[in-house]
Image (cartoon, rainbow, N blue to C red; front, side, top):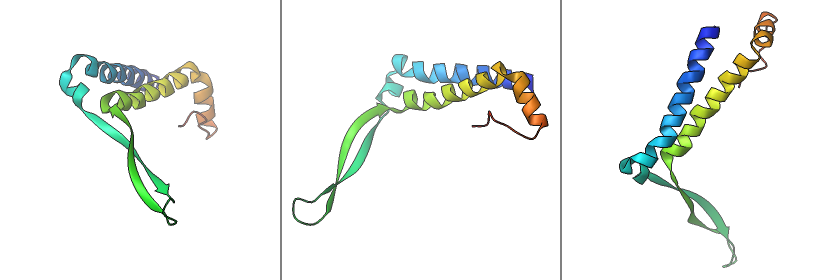
Length: 98
């Protein structure tokens, strides 16, 4: 299990770094931008009417890289506290589950 967590830490770390870096070198990846929108309620007419407004545009690949980096951090936390992790598993607990 130690080897598994170590391998997954490195895999998620490399994947996250690669996903974050690709839009800096690939114009196609950089151009894949999605809008972040939100609905707002307008009461100016005396009744509610919703308007959809664009709040932000984001390069999707950079933001999805955050999940891989967060996963790498989770594996790192388990590896850093390995003895506690194993002793807790023997007691039927997993405080490092996320």
